[in-house]
Length: 195
Length: 235
Image 1: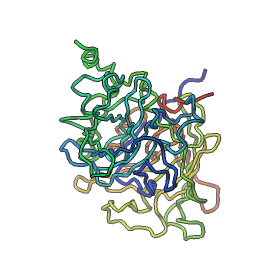
Image 2: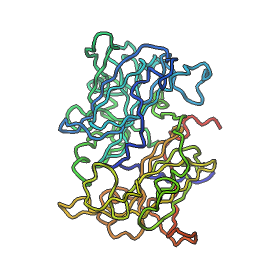
Image 3: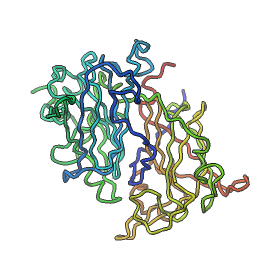
Image 4: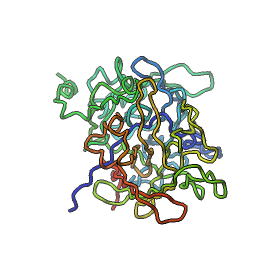
């Protein structure tokens, strides 16, 4: 067997990532690119702020989100029932948050086995290489037994759980979370690289 | 004592990396987590390998940064061709990866609205381009040799010539930088110094090009590390 190759190093996005690469960003996954068909499930709004140690917004931030559909299935090549998955939901978006904040309208992800509803986020900005975490939803019963949440010290778990906040009448329920990159209230980030 | 409390008291070696603060500017010291990264339980591991199956449709010539569009005038500066192969740690080529590349112009300025540099802009150079790796994991860009620039006038710190690369596709994800061997600013560049033992893998050596209209050529091979690129591999 061939000797494993040494990986290229992850590096900062730097301050000059061309926002043109993101183009027309999708901040509403409850619609499929303006077409009539829509994904199954209940709409929710996720309000996220990315903050630095001083609690100032991280500007600009590039955030890539990935989640399961309403039935709890993530779209991967080896998903067992791939052909019966929700055709109108790919669960992925890439957001260029020029002011360090964004609102993502999406579908409440379903429970999947032991996994509670959650949204995976890869966060990129100047001054640091990619960091990854997952955001959960306040009030979901499955949070109590989610293996990722349960792997953290109890006092840190709430830092990954978006709190239910008031939304406008007729609008979907809203959940808000500050992601704190460093210092007081620092968000737990996860090692998905070093194996 | 709960299981989770045990987890926290584990030795650091059983946690993930401690990310290092880069001294490029104050953003790094305000944004780099103090805590080590946390290990992901196996039951959650696959959910940390976002799988991207839809890539944007590219136009002809997006990998040629020397012209904004076919038929437009040439950008100013030395033309360099950069090619390479993208692989996983087992040496297998990674195909259908979107590579986004961006860099400064001949005078060391980005077209980005936030670049405060006083160096001139070039009306014929946007400084960013895209391509997709072929079945053998290969990519190719033609661009302008990016000049070093004074990133921190307050402390006279320069950034060496470099190009930024972002790779995404399947469950691969990597943002990295490529540098030019022999650049006199490398020794004092915090980004380059942070690479440590990886430095040599991020240096390219340019050679004269035999192609007409092209000044130099170089090879930059990229390895996407970790288990994510092959998380959903069916082969």
